[in-house]
Structure formats: structure tokens, C-alpha cells
Image (cartoon, rainbow, N blue to C red; front, side, top):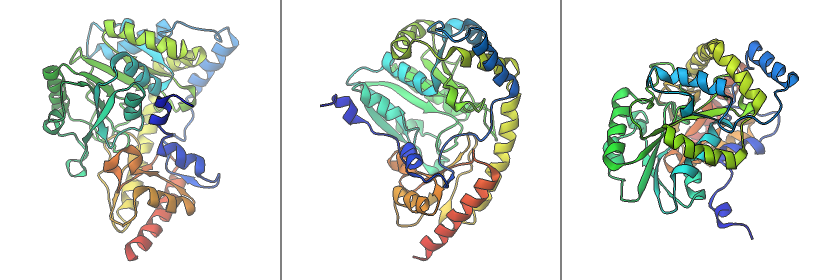
Length: 377
């Protein structure tokens, strides 16, 4: 008999579609940039491995890397130091360690719907209750702060924010950020701000929550920005007293993040993330391809994503999102059903344009053919 918490969660719909797919399928489902880390970053990894960098490091991360990250956030809050920064095993572990430090059994945690697949399960694993706040396509998937406030109760402990959003690509304007901060301060809530895609934006820069309130934990990662998803290096930035508590959780989850990978990421930061800007230019071009081709799909509409590398089109066919994704999979195309991200994704598919232009063109042709048939049915 397994613990009850194991029955509270399941493998995400993203992973299920990926693992069910034949190796020849075109993958527009996974958030996996088809780039490699820059040469200098790879060289730094190899240098670390060959020169003694294969052992345990400090639990909170290499001091030099934490210092470099703190400098990035110091422009928003001059008092930021490496004591505010913890290096984690990807953004996912940063979210988990933060949840361990903040959520108690019986707490209510406000999570976006549609929203990233880990937010609600993390709450459930800790005996807390995820309470979904809806993101409406008619509002370009931006939160209605007034509606969120009506969900707050005496049990509400935290609100999870994601900008740029996975799966919708929405980027919060500064006014909305300020409204959410005011809401959190009125009700004594913590803000968990997932800013993993903050370097991949098209229409406007991301407004970070850091430096605007002492009630925030910012979660970030190098998986996408350095095209190093397999290295599992993320980080969080938190007020110092809270960072101490989160670091305890991080230590008991995994002791420390990969030491050579941290050295490599430091080299990437010292190089100014120029490769990320190059990737983002390419993602912008791919976004244009996706939006053009989706416009040719009968029965589909799409809010242009302002950041990240996902489109979240809505369809009007009778099928559910899971049924549509399975039908597309049978034709050799992997997409992610929108209901993997919450009930409000029930008539959506997530399309990743982290894939090559060739795969995008071929995959979207399959989608268009399916949409034409579904519309006629």
C-alpha cells in the first residue's frame, strides 16, 4: 500500500503524450529548444569535470554563481545579495522546495487555470488545496485580479503567478503586477512568481515581482535560456529569512544541484546570454509561422503569445482536447492537450514552437488537415 499522497497526483499529460508517441512522430508537444548550449558553456562544463568539479558543493549553490545571479536582480532591488539566491535542480525543484517551506496541510493555494502542470500537484502533495483562478482567452489569458480576490479565504496562503505563461504565452503588464502585489499585501499572502521564460519575450519585457514586495519568491531556470534542459539547473530568489528556510527544504530534497553544471551556467551568465537573444529571434520567426498556419486551420483561433515558445489555440470541434491530441498522435503529430493544464484548457491544444521550422511546417500541415476533416464532420 502506497502513501495517500502518491494517489493524489499523476504523471502530467505532457509526459504521457511524449512517452506514448512513436519515435518517428513530429514533436510539437514538448518544451525542448532544438538548440545546444553555447560552445563556451560546454567548454566550461568539460573544464569543471576534468579539473575536480565533480564533488558536492554548497547546498545553496556555488557562491560565484549566486553572486552573479544576485547582480542581475540588484537593479530591481539594490540590497539583493547572494544570500537571497538558492541554486536548485531546475525550476521544478525550486517550486517544490518553496512549496515545502510555505504550504501547510489545509492551506489554500491560488493557482492559474490554465497553468503549468506542477502547481496544483505540489499543493496536493503537501496536504494543501489548490484553488484555480481562471484565465480567459477573451482577456488574452491575463488574470482578473478582482475575480481572484473573491477566491481568497481565511485559509488562503499563497498565489502562484507565471509570466510569461506556460501554456498561454501571456505576459503580465506592470499594472497587473502591481494589482497582484496589492492583493497579496491586503490578505497577507505569499507570491510564488514563476519567471522561467523571462528572457524569451516578443512584445514587451517581463515585469518581475522582485524588488516590489517582500512577500515574493521568484523562481527561474537556465533550462530554456541556455538550451540545457537536461542539466537541471534553476534558482530562486527570496527574502533572506525565507531563503534560509527554503534552503533547508532544498537540502533535504537533494543536498545540492550539479556542481559542474553550475560552473557551466556561470560561464553562460558571464557571456551575457547572447545565445538566448539569438534563440529568441528564431523563436519570434517560428511564432510567425505558427500563427500564420493556425489561421489556416478551420475552427481554430489563437491569442498571439507575448512570451515563451508556446501557442495555445482554441478549437471548436466536438472532441475534447485529449481526444484531439490522441487523434493527432495517431497521424504522427505530438501536441499537448489543453486539459493537461486545467479544466479551462478543455478546448485547447498547446503547440510548442521550440521545434525546428521543418518540423513546425510538417506538423502544422497535419493539424490543418485534421482541422479540415473535423470541421466537415
